[in-house]
Length: 51
Image (tube, rainbow, N blue to C red; front, top):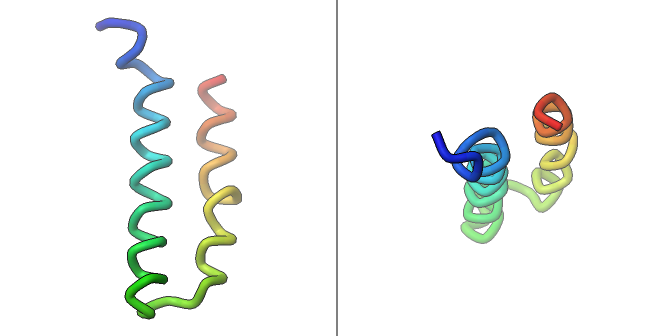
């Protein structure tokens, strides 16, 4: 497996997925803006595990 498709790239894909659905829901007014504040708290421990 190439190194670029390992942990780092997959973390980026998970980061993008996590923030994109939240942004979509906020723009659709289905969730409050405060849901965006959960992004770092949810993703930081996962990313730290791979670094």
